[in-house]
Image 1: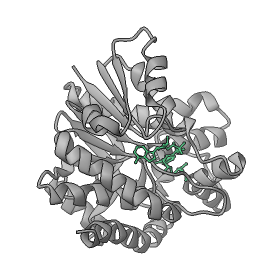
Image 2: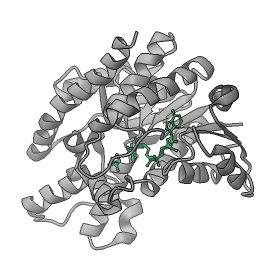
Image 3: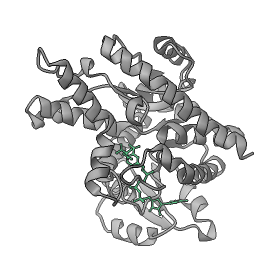
Image 4: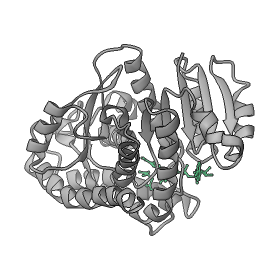
Length: 333
Ligand code: NAD
Ligand code: LMR
């Protein structure tokens, strides 16, 4: 029996994500919480002929608590999305408080659940969840994940496009490490499972790297004020959730990049800090998943000089983003 909960379930990401979780045969119960519209979304999904029993909850009558009771996995896409001209950090003002309050609900009602954070800015909202959990004495770094899967999905697609064979996209894997915003997104294209064409020019490599780093902007621009990526994010979020659930059910050897607290597994986390050359608390790297969450954090491996430069550029911004999330909770004591 697995209960999955979506917080922000009536939104642009929340609805298709809830659909994909309802279609996942591993999910037997699906709790949907939002400040609006969840009864309708739940009624609609409940007619789909898959095992999950669906319930929708709103804030009155302890709706958040009811949604979270018995949760094994909680996915959080609640909060405002970007409009053209905004950075993800511009969302902090509104989304930090939303994520803090939802994290408080999880800490008090489902402290053992796996928590998958989608709400931006991920580099800061994940530390917010961790600090709330620490305050409640229930923080387990193995169970907290910032969802960076969309960067990985984009890298696979864009590499397949460069190779001129979109049918290869599902089998292309590129580790994308660092964080989830602009220069903190570091695609390690030299480690693509399908190599780039030999002699791939450096200006092309730079353009491809930038496309992965700023893929979110492409969608924000095309949606022209109507929000950011929702459908591709729902796909990516459901992919990552599915991996977490398969690992929970005992499947071995599942590896996926995610933004985690580097204490999640001490030896491999410390080794990664050495590789990065900085005492960062959080970083996105390929994670091996198990029934209790993070089993180990994989090393970055050999980086090209270009990739080393990307890493150096990412570190100061990551540090600032992490500190912003941590101090938000520190200051709200
Ligand atoms: P949206 O506005 O369509 O949906 C957000 C939903 O959150 C709405 O239904 C809203 O009612 C709900 N909400 C607001 N406050 C809430 C609260 N306190 N409790 C519960 N629900 C609440 O936005 P969206 O396009 O779905 O994006 C959601 C978030 O996901 C944004 O912050 C966006 O930047 C982020 N995002 C992250 C990634 C990623 O790769 N991690 C990708 C795309 C979008
Ligand atoms: C993305 O990468 O698409 C998301 O983080 C949404 C955004 O603001 O770009």
